[in-house]
Image 1 (cartoon, rainbow, N blue to C red):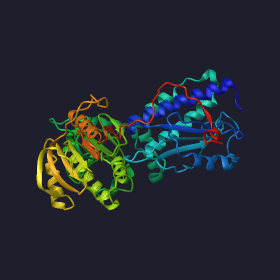
Image 2 (cartoon, helix red, strand yellow):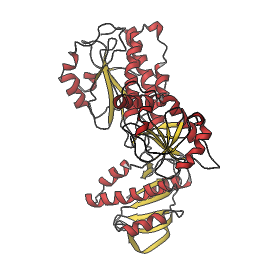
Image 3 (tube, rainbow, N blue to C red):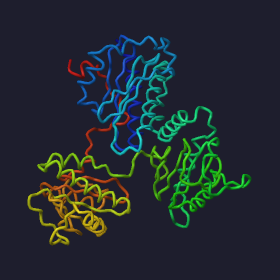
Image 4 (cartoon, one colour):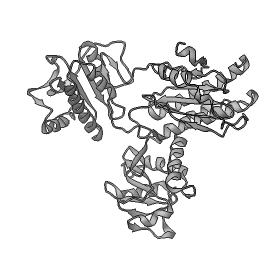
Length: 480
């Protein structure tokens, strides 16, 4: 067992990292919890810190992995010198549902495993996994030092780690596909992408694709235009690059760079490795070989796909009395309407009325209602969604009205920071049973509202940033 002084030091280290990890990932992916299990020595008890109940419900799996099975303690490859904190022997992600994990063995912390939430709308899990990997390294580093040398800076590193996590993941992929000697420097490329994304040209936001290719693979590109070597625009000249994007706007062409300068314009045939910045107006996506790594907007990187997954809506529909096939088709109809609204960059509201007889809503009632199972009527509904007011869809998968006005009395659950469309949905669902409302805002994520509550916005934990959390023995936590 560790003494009280050492316990306080370890508790402080863990708390700083958890706070930084949770804050950083919350900015990158939306509200994110974090937790850790660890053992300081091979014969030490497994400890747990889960201040936001991220691991709740997984107790049987942790009991099976770390208590019933003690093989994790038998690892003779772990350094015995606590100063060898950088030699991390990775451990496998246990693959818990809804969670991402990263862990390892080291000389200063015999075993550790960090966890966070696996959000359904991630472009890629890669940057988040690199984030957790850095948390492993920071904890190992902090405990390798004496308490007098502890600076408490690990949490701040992790809070601001977004760009580094994206870069680390890209470097990992480059090393696998290109080897270790590529001259392409990723940080300047990432800086350029963010600066270009914020540069308007004649009042328009950038559109088009910027392709970054290793110089050794340039001969594999189908160049349509090549710039002379002495007058090639430099990537750091963001305004010039922004102007050149006009040449590939809304086309299958790419503006090509070697990470330093703009080399020309090529077609859609890509080499074995490429990094592409796909600018789409106010936002865009960073891709490796056509696979999304992350998105970018407002001068920062994030994990969102900007496509509503509507997991909460799917769960609510599965809990109703609807037949599984009916709930599936109703879900697909709503997702189609929401995605169309997002693509066209206009807000809309969809009322899903699960009552046997649809409720009366003020608006343009349709007689007869439109059968949304038919592609042409669904297309018509997408056009009607542009009109101010809500679409009214029944459990029969028919559109009963559009331009509907949702009314209701004010109540304590309103969010005054949101607009009329959002708060009207809160009021309406608070006063009407068996109603789900999906709100699409042009500048915010999609909201699913039921019984006067934003289902996505319900926070199951209190974030007490700066707090020192208690450490708990894993065997006590699982109830042994």
